[in-house]
Amino acid sequence: MREQRIWQLDRIRGLAIVLMLLDHVLALNPSVGGMAVRLSLTRFAMPLFMMTAGYLIASKRSAFSARRLSVIAAAGVVSCTCCWSLSLPTFDILVGFAFVVMVTGAVVRWPLLLVLVGFIQAAWLPLHFPAYELGAVVAWVSIGALIVGSMHSGSFLAWADRVPRVLEPIGRYPLRWYVGHLVVLAVMVLLMRT
Image (cartoon, rainbow, N blue to C red; front, side, top):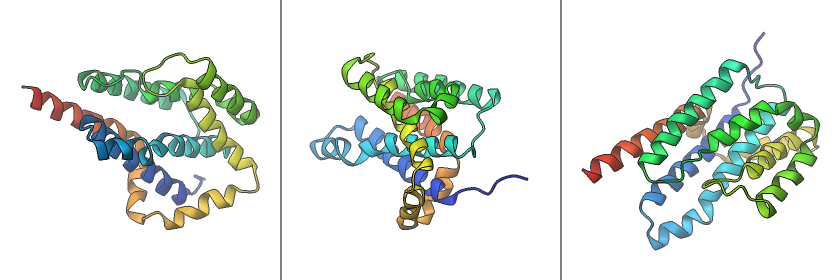
């Protein structure tokens, strides 16, 4: 029997996707006001999304098969290609997430250790990835795994009641939205350059 979806996670992921879309649109038009929004509000997109992924991984609601990993990797290639055509950093977040998917056992067993190691790597041993450091991705996914094991698991989901229901379908298909928006942005930029 298939487990029931956690609609609260779909809403939270939907919110993260909308913040990310806003961030990427503002990145293409770096006005003064847009940069302030990018450096504050939209920077919550990646941590929020990765925490929901960690929550799903740790609650055993998301089985990452070889097929799913290959879909994530293929989406990463498409995203990197779109980012390259937009003259944006080409190391896509999906590449880092594909790495995390390969080590989900460690995320579930040692989340606190991975939070510490991830943030230490990101802060003091940077790999100089153009987007997010791999350690930051690992740390935020591991925080999501920690939430599952804590007494605050219900609190994490409870605040999703305040997130508009309209974001739920967006969060249900995050990979489609993520790759789709990059393709649309790439086409728009290429059309404007010609």
